Every structure is written in structure tokens, then in C-alpha cells.
Amino acid sequence: MKILLINPPRSPHNDILKYAPEAAKPFIHRKLIGPPLGLLTIASAIRDHEVVLFDMKGEYDLDPQTPPLADLTRRLLEKHRPGIVGVTIKTSEFNHAIEIFRVVKAFDPSVITLAGGLHPTLCPQDFEGQPADIVVPGQAASIINELVDNLARFRIDPSGCIKIPGIRVNLGERYIETQGIASSCDPAGRDFVMPDRSLLRRWIGTYKVGNSPDPSTYIFTSLGCPYKCTFCSIWGQFSGRYHQRDIESLITELKSIDEYPVVRFSDANTVVDTRFMEKLFDRIQEEGIRKVFVMDIRADIAVKHPALIAKMARGGLKVVICGFESFRDAELKRYRKQSAAVSNLEAIRVFDDNGIMVRGNYVIPNTYTEADFEALAEYSAQNPVVYAGYTILTPMPGTVYYEEVKDQIIEKDYSRYNFFNSVMQTTLPYEQFHERVGALWLIKKGKDVI
Ligand code: B12
Ligand code: SF4
Image 1: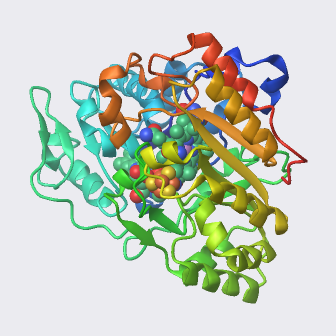
Image 2 (image 1 turned 180 degrees about the vertical axis):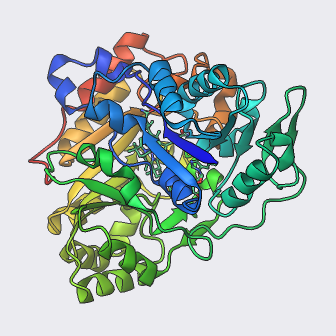
């Protein structure tokens, strides 16, 4: 049975960009670029079946004249005639995923639709009444084969899957959560699936970040995060667990991706076990692996372990994304960041000393007034980083922050939940708030490394 796996297009909404001063616009993110690692993992797990992976983000980047979503989906259905269509979904892509499922069901109601990824993991209930036959929460690489085998055996009838624990099955009149707990999955260890990047070859030229002429790929050395920041979706996705990869498996993967000189670690929080990172970079050196590495490192960790940062820089670490979040301890405390504002400044020094380009990200609450914006702008200008990102503190469904403020949410359209549009009433007028956020992007120093 043929399975079509789709990475949906990006949400088009970006009110920071829309209302920003013209001078700031070139610096503001228009789109994040990168291969869909989760979907690739799923595709690689079921490679014994006939799988087609289609990256719609990559396709629209490759050819902006690509037809609109519904037409593109119909073309894919006509070309491949799949029995199953699976879509990977984060919150801002929910609407696009539902549109894809609608087109599939209109094309042929017997095609099974599968929803997987972050949003189905955190909010599986959102799919009730939607044209998604099966919702697969969590790291699905360990059950996807069983699921597909069942669908094949039961002639593509979703009711044949109700014995698989931990999924949601839409039986038309009933939307049921199957009994039992999904067998414990060890996604970074026993159940790790080596991604087969040849499935993404068509779009490799689009996976370029910054000014780099070379394509980049994602690799994870860990999944989840041991911290519990209130606004963050990631620790909830993994129920607070942190899964670490095996070093030799990582070395094998790094040695197999010659066509990708730039490697972006997709870890939420790359340096947790410092001994692991020491060893990984020893092995990278021993094997003579030369890559430009990009990764997320917490400010407090960089401050505590400058020698490790120096070693990683010698091993190819060139860009660090650092969640500064705020310049005020009171805000950091409210977000449960467990890092003090002073660490942001000290971390900038550690990274600068090692020639690492820092991308520092601040999150802006909807309550910010002119005085708050001025205070942040002054602080940022005194402590500039090569590239600073300013996005909106957004209550992503499934987070602690969402529960804290859900009564204040005025925007229910998920396609606006991408950190670029306020979904709550802003203290400043809406346009002015976004303009102020946009203007902050002007504060940067130096030249981008890649
Ligand atoms: C790689 C990545 C990307 C890549 C690729 C994503 C893609 N699909 O195209 C790119 C760069 C394109 C990207 C873009 C964006 N991203 Co992003 N991204 C990540 C990142 C760093 C890693 C995800 C990952 O690869 N994890 C490892 C894999 C193995 O796990 P996984 O994806 O969960 O997949 C497993 C399961 O979920 C499941 N599964 C996944 N898909 C499917 C599909 C089916 C059918 C099934 C059955 C199972 C299944 O099985 C997989 C294997 O076990 C995470 C942060 C993090 N560290 O988690 C943010 C993250 C997911 N991104 C996030 C966001 C917000 C975005 C953007 C909206 C940012 C922006 N402002 O533009 C855009 C989305 C586009 C848009 N504008 O709408 C948020 C999501 C928050 C939320 N609740 O939605 C995260 C959590 C980061 C954060 N700061 O909070 N992203
Ligand atoms: S914001 Fe970073 S440190 Fe905090 S929980 Fe999320 S991934 Fe972990």
C-alpha cells in the first residue's frame, strides 16, 4: 500500500514583518528553512512500504509558482494514488493540514488520513470532528509500522487499529482514544531510526540558511528538555523526559551526510550532559569530521562551561541560538527559565571570545508599553549580538502559559500561532505593538558568520 507523507506549507501570517519600519524588514524572519526531520524519520521507519515524502515548504521555496495547496494536494493524489496520507503538524500548520485532509477525503473517502507531530501530540482533541481518521500522538517511529500493517490487513479500515494503544481513531459517529498506553518508546536509543535523506533530495537546494551557499540539515543529539519553561511546547511533548542519542550512532550519521556542510542540531537544549558533549566533540575530532555546527545552548550553561564552549568552537560550532527571553529577572522567573538576566550578558562574552555568532532571542509579552520597549531597546543596544530575534510571547496550546492566560486569548485561528502575531489583546494598539517589536530587529552588530 502506498503512503504519501506531507510536510505542509508555512503559515503566511507575519504581522511583525507587516507593521515593521521599512529599515527593519530585511532583518526580520520571513521563513524558517530546514528539512522536516520528524516526517523523514517516519518515512524512514516504513521504508519497506512504498513511501512518497513530499515537502510542500521546500516545493514552494523551489518554485513560488507552485499551485495553491488544494490543487497541489490533488495533483499529488492523482500522481501517486496513495492508500494513506500522513501529515506532520505544528500548531501554526493545523489549518493547512485540515485543508489537505479535506481534499484527500473529497478525492477518495477511502484514503486513510493520519495526523502526527507536535500539535497532535499536545492537543489530540483538536482533531475531533475533523477529516483525520487517525491521530498519532508522540514519537511514532516505533508504532508506525504496526499501524500501517494493520491498515493494510484490515483493508484500510481505521476501526482495525483500535487495538493499537495510545492513538485516537475517528469512527465517524465516535472519536475514540484507544485503550492502554503506547509501548514505551525510546526514540533516541532502541527505537532510533536513521533518517534516509535521499527522500528529500529534490529540495536540498532550498535548505540553505543565512548567506550560506551550502545546504544544511537537521540532526538531533537529544530529544526533549529537562527544564520546564512555561511558554515552551517541547518539554510537554516529551512529558518532561530527556532522551540522549548514542555517540557512535551520531558519528555514523555525521559521516553519512557529505552533501550537507552545515549541520543544525535540532535539540531543544543541546548541552545538558556536558560529558556527553565533551566526548562527542572528541570523536568528531578523531574522525576528522568538518562541519559548520549550529545549535541551541542556554546562556547559563555557556557561562558555567566556557572550556566546553571553546572546545566545541574548535570542533566547528559557529552559530549558537540562545533563548535570552528577557532582560528582567522578574520576567525570567515568571517564565520559569531558571537563568538570570546577567547570564545573558556573560554568555555573549563567552560566545564572542570563541568567535561564535550568537543569535539571541527575546520574547515580547502583549503587555509591553512604550516604556518597556524603550528599556529593552536600550539594553539590547548596549549588549548587541550578531543577530537578535524578537518574537511575541505566545500561549501555544498545550503549554503552562496557555493554561495561565487562556481566558485572555482573542485570536483562535491557529495559523497565527507562529510567534509573529499577538493572539492576545495588546496594551499598545495592535499595529503599534507589532511595529515596536519589528523595530527591535534593527539592533544587531557585525556580520553574519553564515
Ligand atoms: C526542525 C524544526 C523546524 C523545521 C522543520 C519543520 C517542518 N516540519 O518543516 C523548520 C525550520 C521548517 C521549522 C519551522 C517552524 N517551526 Co519549528 N522546529 C523544529 C525543531 C527545531 C525540531 C523538530 C524536530 O525535528 N524534532 C525531532 C523529530 C524526530 O521529532 P518530531 O518532529 O516531533 O517528529 C516525531 C513525532 O512528532 C512524530 N511525527 C512527526 N510528524 C509525523 C507525521 C505523522 C503522519 C506521524 C504518524 C507521526 C509524526 O514522529 C516523529 C518521529 O518520532 C523544533 C524544536 C525542537 N527541538 O523540538 C521546532 C518547533 C517544532 N518549531 C516551532 C515553530 C513555532 C516553528 C515555526 C512556526 C517558526 C516560525 N515562527 O516560523 C516554523 C513553522 C512554519 C510556519 N511558519 O508555520 C515550535 C512549535 C511550537 C508549536 N506548538 O507549534 C518548536 C517546538 C520550536 C519552539 N521554539 O517552540 N521548524
Ligand atoms: S525554552 Fe528551552 S530550556 Fe526552556 S523548556 Fe523549552 S527547550 Fe527547555
